[in-house]
Amino acid sequence: MDEHRDLVILGGGLVGMTLALAAAKKGFSSHVIDRADPAELTAEGFDGRASAISTASWNLFRNIGIAPALEPQACPIASIAVSDRLRPGGIAFTPAEHEGTLGRMFANRALRLALFEAARAQPLIAWHASARVTGRERSEHGVRATLADGSRLAGALLIGAEGRQSPTREDAGIAIAKWDYRHRAIIAGLTHEQPHGNVAWEIFYPAGPFALLPMLDDSNGQHRSALVWTVSEGDAAGTLKLSDRAFTAEVEARMGGVLGAVTALGARSSYPLGFHHTARITESRLALVGDAAHGIHPIAGQGLNLGLRDVGALVEVLDEGARLGLEPGDAQLLARYERWRGLDSFMVALATDGLTRLFGIPGDTASAVRRLGMAGVERLPPLKRWFMDEARGMAGDLPELLRA
Image (cartoon, rainbow, N blue to C red; front, top):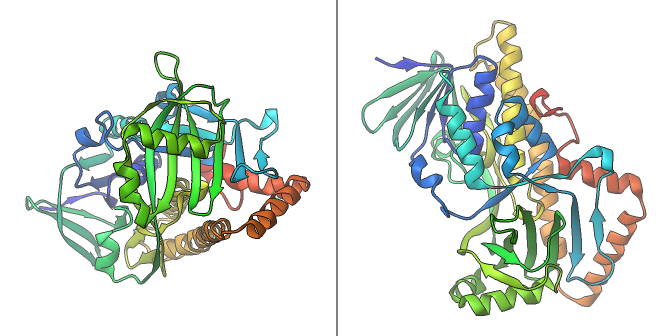
């Protein structure tokens, strides 16, 4: 017999599990199905990645009840310093004191632990970990996912949250526009000589951005940051094979002394960078969220936050529909979700793609033009305010769960 719940969420990562918890907050039950073993995902040093959580996304975490568990592990982002090769003419985005921070930095492991612990304690969530989906069905009466062990999990709405290579999206035949930047992001944790002062650095080089993201000091009081260094695909393998000493020297050369000497280097990893955006984010009894719907360059650190905006919008649409007596798979509700999130996510994706291309133009003339543009933003408070609101995720039509 099928076990029926309101939602069948395929993908239990950061976006998928946040969606299940946010939906439960509104009374919706869900199956969450994920191929990964949670013990591996939460192991020390699993992938070393960190995420910038915007103000709006932090509001979402607060509203679904996981903020208290996360707060001790948050490193506030007080300012974002943007520079073209550390030449004069950069710009610093610093909110007024009463506005709080621009966001918070977390190790992805900390986010996973908080989400997984909350999900285990939530009776409205049936979590199927280390499970492989062998079949997906959608009909006018409902949806069903069949697992490799023969289990059949039914619901009213199927949600694809498996990430960039979403098999649910492919199974539905949803068209997608995509291209490869032919770059890789190299990820590493750094311990450094000087405190970061809660400043996130985005230093642009012709080969790609070089980001230093503030993290909490370690237990010994050593200053730490997360490195996201974009290199060309052709240089990635060689860069990863460098000895720790040689890699550190390359990193320090690009840091320009802003954090002093690098005193320790964590494990390195990398992933390819590309752009994709679906023609639609819904089909009959199907909604896509997060990277299943849109994948962007990490240049502005908005990828996860964009997915969390999807979460807030979808849950709000479903909740308002329930008040009208509509079930989660209703076509009217999915159409509203499509209108709400389709354009916003597309505009953010285009903006990040444009920035990537703009700062990738080589030459001193291009650099001078970019620095002139940044100086202009610095002198125009309304424009600078708009950029900061975008960074904090507080611009546009915000879902209720993402408001303070």
